[in-house]
Amino acid sequence: MGRHLLAAAALLGMVAVGSGLSAAEALAAKAAAIVVDARTGQVLIDQDADAITHPASLTKMMTLYLTFDALEDGRLTLDQQLPVSSWAESMTPTKLGLRAGQTLKVETAILGLVTKSANDAAVVLAEALGGTESRFAEMMTRKARELGMRHTVYRNASGLPNMEQVTTARDYSYLSRALMRDHAKYYPYFSRRNFVYGGRTLANHNHLMSRYEGMDGIKTGYTVASGFNLAASAVRDGRRLVGVVLGGKSAVSRDNRMAALLDQAFGRPNRGRDDAPVMASLDTTRSDAIDGEGDDDDEEVEVKAKPVRASLQTAAVPAAIPAAPAREEKSTRGGSPSHWGVQVGAFSSKAAGNKAVSQAVKQAPFLLRTAKASVVEAKTGKDTVYRARLTGLDEKDARKACAVLTKHGHHCVAVSPGERG
Image 1 (cartoon, one colour):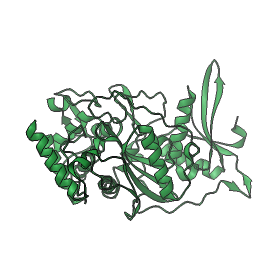
Image 2 (spheres, helix red, strand yellow):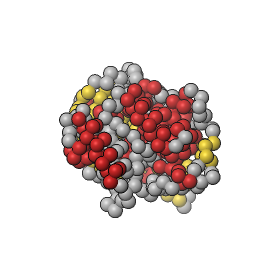
Image 3 (cartoon, helix red, strand yellow):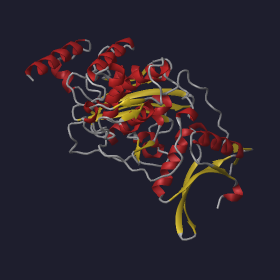
Image 4 (cartoon, one colour):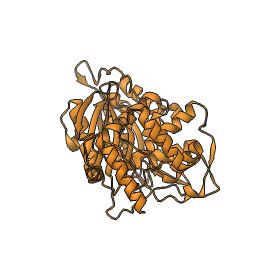
């Protein structure tokens, strides 16, 4: 134990030299942030972006980067079944609950990392690519250097607590951009809201995606040592930004800080709750978190809404690098308001309807950002349902929005003015 502590201190001392921090400061550094232009890399906001801290579950972004590398060059396939070892089974939560001797499909492992932040699935991928997790961590660190991440050191594939596993906000802005640039084909995985495993629907821990216009990823993380971390990307008016916040005091404060920083970088006022399409953020943190990788929430979230899930094959590649041109808004014709809308489902609870509206706005932000959200109670026989709609569109935009949402796996029906009841 003494040798390990000395090694950790020495490593942190060496890493800290590049940023002017002592080893003690490196261990304590928190509350760092950066926002950059995804296409050019221009730094728009820098708040202690070179402070050394721990990545927590943002680590899985590098695990996925190397997994996508392996998919691209044929070392893995999405349908390939990978063995689960006793080491993978032994991981602490969050996890899928894998058992040694099982197999896990590569695509399921990817979804487990993106949504559930599953530590056991991360080890399965690590052992498949590196033989052992420790050798895979060496591969991760080498790749970090190739991507310009000078201050990042990996010791495991999941982000579980390890004093030697360190990074900076700036380094993670490099990795975020690299994922979009080098693996645009696979980037849509990061916008998955949930997936079904073992008969349960597991929700994505990144709650900010549900309330921040144009956000489509990337990853949350939390350990006691790291605080609440988030790497995120959002598109507005054809421009994509990448933001990284490390060391938040809670999931909500971290999310609010990210939203404010992105608003500032996009050149828009931070409108707080008015900037959310429908849903407000919920603080799902736990003060009694185990010394594991809780990733904001160490319990599975059962999802009650029933929209059809999107598949990677039909998901659009994000307008990221280069950014797509802004779309001209056409919410009115002849100077008068438009009266068409889209219905994205009828749900058993108002909360589920609100969530569906938020997801729809996220999937088609340019078509729906000026639409008015409406979740209205209605009777169908003895049952009560909540119709989730977005109104204030012209016919062309309503039909186009439904085409986009249907492509992404959402239920959607264009609603004409005569069908508004």
